[in-house]
Length: 203
Image 1 (cartoon, rainbow, N blue to C red):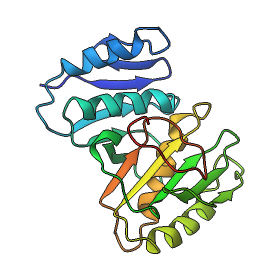
Image 2 (cartoon, rainbow, N blue to C red; image 1 turned 90 degrees about the vertical axis):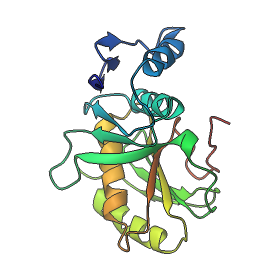
Image 3 (cartoon, rainbow, N blue to C red; image 1 turned 45 degrees about the vertical axis):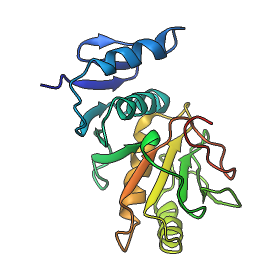
């Protein structure tokens, strides 16, 4: 069966193999370890610790997608009022969405930014007391999701921010989808620049 796949504060730990993404051959090693997994075109579960780096979680999700996983169930012991499990689609498995598709990220200063996939003026919510202000962010997300025909949304976080905050933002996106329009939630491979068009496929 599938071994345990984990990303912690030190990076990916997949089936007992530690991958150091800061090393020159880190990305290559990650790809090799993941290609050896028995994915067989099935969804994969990934445990992501709260203090993991968003870039490490995103790198693993992207490689799992490249190796055939259609979706990745990410489990994080986050806030009690938000889902502890989110299903994400690897970036490489989505085609270009409508330009109005919602993109959201947690910025370095723990503010959140929401803007259209095709670029354009977004909305920023200053951070709350204990991290991102998810209630105001959620109100804006509800409006933006409702106003667009897209069934896909995108999320990310600055790499200085712990994964937990990206996970909570993803849960907020899902919770803000009042009409349950969103079929696909994409964890972007690399943190985008808020307000600029989102580039897929590392382009």
